[in-house]
Length: 152
Image 1 (cartoon, rainbow, N blue to C red):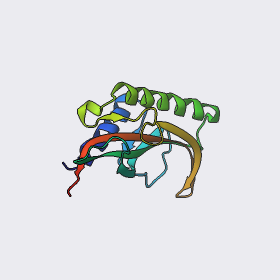
Image 2 (image 1 turned 135 degrees about the vertical axis):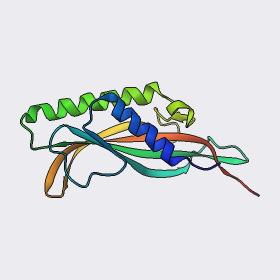
Image 3 (image 1 turned 90 degrees about the horizontal axis):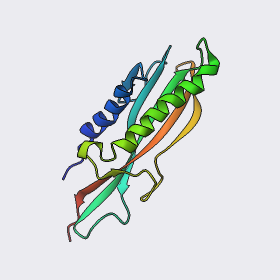
């Protein structure tokens, strides 16, 4: 079996687009800062065996994605930045919990961290291209069944 990464990334991007909270959703970190609204970006963070999830003939994997939400710090209502980001974040967390198997593409979203770090988000700031953003970075751990054959 091969990792269908394009379809998995597309499914994660679709959740963000369907939420209605984002001006744009990228499959990469944005090259220019968002000037209004919230932008989301999705990319691969880590992949490796899902310890305890694999059998003797194949290896199941833990594929961790980063989903980062960006909001410019130069907005008319600074007090609205965090509440707007948290509203968008809440919608995505609910989507990942509700579509536990990403439409059958994966075994499950590792919500509680059975095979590593759980679904979570961390707030921060990012300076890029001369602009500053307020960001929320989601770690989205996905378990993919029987990805690599184990050959003796």
